[in-house]
Image (tube, rainbow, N blue to C red):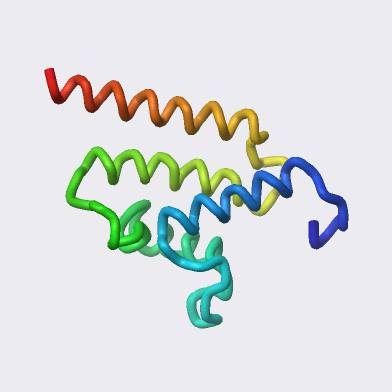
Length: 116
């Protein structure tokens, strides 16, 4: 939006990705300048320095359950796709919904496999 001044579906995708990052990290979208200035930059730098979940996921959540961490990591990957720098690299919202539904289905399947 900042470059084209046009609102597109890809702008919505980016915003949705930011909301997912807020939920996953427990952080606000605006970060101190020493942490990148915004949540997307902070997460991308953290992933480059560490790993997908190490120190990124909100530690107020139950991170002892590996199934929860695995699912949150999948959603983190989706959020990173949504916040890609290039709008053409971002998925459509339809694709985002499908990826989230698939992640939920995988989570339910792996949970039922452990119970049986």
